[in-house]
Image (cartoon, rainbow, N blue to C red):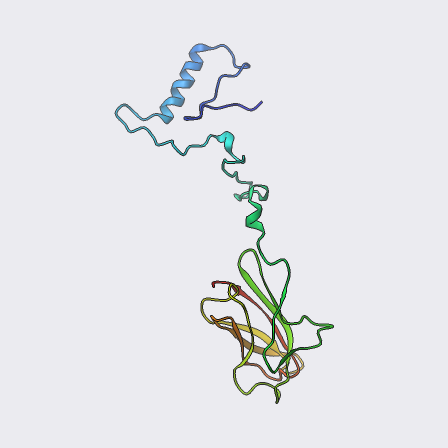
Length: 199
């Protein structure tokens, strides 16, 4: 049986199963009132926003906590768990860059999660001459809503040698992805990084 409480001080209403012990009941009530009502001359507590324990985990009430101290997933609004991109979006590539063997490897693409994390990946190769660009080279550009506030430096993998070597790609505030350094990217450049969208 669910015990109902008074709306202001959350004192339990008498139950039919309670024993008829008036002195004991009066004493229990007095102790409960002492705990919630200030001494004479004190300022009554502001209970305008009070919600009784019966509102815990209920609509228009407040969330409860599980044994780990976290809000149960059943009490988290669906809107807080969804909202990210439903699928990947192809990333248009700048001149000199192509998707390398897209039958077996991921082409350049991006997406954003409900938490605002932008994920970018793609297996590319350089076709603009020589084994790699002679300097910084534009790879592509992310749209508004998928951009960092400041330049974000990412570490990726270039062909380099048979094991692959480090390759740097910078993501600028305007959404441009810029190759900065990496050896033998005419063979391949494996682009895989993520960051928080800030603008």
